[in-house]
Image 1 (cartoon, rainbow, N blue to C red):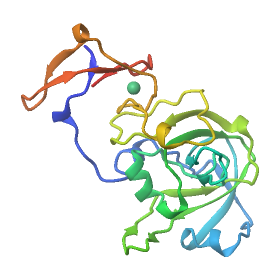
Image 2: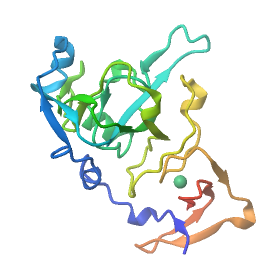
Image 3: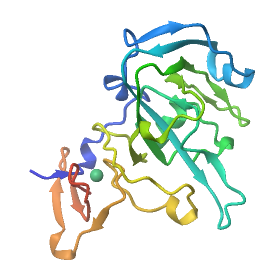
Length: 238
Ligand SMILES: [Zn+2]
């Protein structure tokens, strides 16, 4: 049985409804320490300015959404660096869901194109709260609501266990993270490369004419599959 795209079966869910099943639970895995002090801009990024600081008692999985955009000479580079301080206990369900759950103001220019999966070691000091809502200039409110974890400054690359592209479509299964590190900046071209809608992998292939096949969806509609994901763990057709 092939893993293929049945558009009829795609169910949209509320932001945060899916990843909560998989999120890292911090209770019992951390010991509270004296609160680490931060500049007001950082404090205000936590809901109601509330956060607590901890020392980890065991390795913990965290996620960081990032992405920088640049023109050809990198002089105008903008966005969120891989090694920024903010992480979360939940993975991004899609680009839009990440924007809502992490309250990522578009003016910060985080492309939200990538997510790094981190394994932070025992005895790491972190601060934890909830992502505060952000009101955009347009009046729109990004609600936040994810756990926000502030990492120590200068955390090392060794903590990263994998990377992935954040999908445009909501994940329906746990994401795959691959070892290959994305480039530091994206340009107009790389922002729009085709990715697997299921896992976000950039290694995809257009099926040859004779390889294409049609599936009957859950509601009886027909869909032709014309692409395949080359990630061996995924092999999704769409
Ligand atoms: Zn895939």
